[in-house]
Image (cartoon, rainbow, N blue to C red):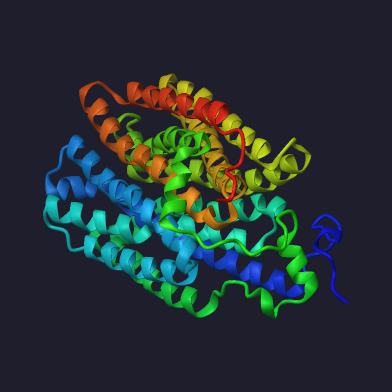
Length: 432
């Protein structure tokens, strides 16, 4: 006896056991890969002073080096999102893990500024599939109105990786050298690549029970999503939603990356903290960010279930979180107390990761089913243009004046991003 999809709901029907196992495995693997992803990104920030001293770099040059990753990462979002939708996340993320891990290990051999820039560019290329793949995995294994929580879970890997970096890497650097921080994290990524390809599979609905199919199709209907194409991908740029998400994420990620790339250096240079104190103070905000991603994902599911539409519920959550980032960055830049500054920065990072989790879950409800990874990647492209600009502009502003105007600049850019989400993201994009 077949079960009509409309008769079943994730609100009244428990997750089928086989689906739950697959969901859990996928999320565990995404978190492991995501933590390594952000450990690799943060290694340069943690080793900032050692590398500057070793290679003789100025603050401005260090800003360029910190941003090199983001330029290639941002540009690769455009083709990678479409490739994930077409090929699937298993092989794209697996290949990305191998490329980025080799590039990370290669960074440990850097002896010149130019070589290091090239290694960071390749790192950005390799890491590009991580979050579009994760968005596709969530859309594959979770029904429409239950995607906020898993999105928050995989996004929580970002601040967790950044929080672990200043706790785990300084002892390794002190015992060996900054080079070994790159070698060890690169090796971790190669192990994760093997695990991901060996363990993850996309759902095959022909092999599922009617209850399992109905659970996954809740809120979307049973029709298979049409195959995406280059023309369909290009068509996304005809909608205000796409531009609102790109501009909005630009603002949010810009401000987040001011802290992500410069926080240890800021605390050491501007706040005059010693290495141990700066390491602990750098970890605390990102542990708060870990909580922010988890709480935001859970909360956005509840908000969305009572909102006028899934897109309005998830958009409003992004706007509120981004405006909160702006509000707490202003005192973070201006207060004299180091404790108060770190407390404000902790709230900003909590909200930054809440905003990111909600933005990625927004992509799963704003995009047509065939182009979820594509729209998520386009949004991420806009975000990491901001992420690429943030360390350069921050470095040169800090070099010319101080870090305070650099933080206030970030707050202004994030405010514009919040308004872009609010006024441009209104209706989901229809299936072509």
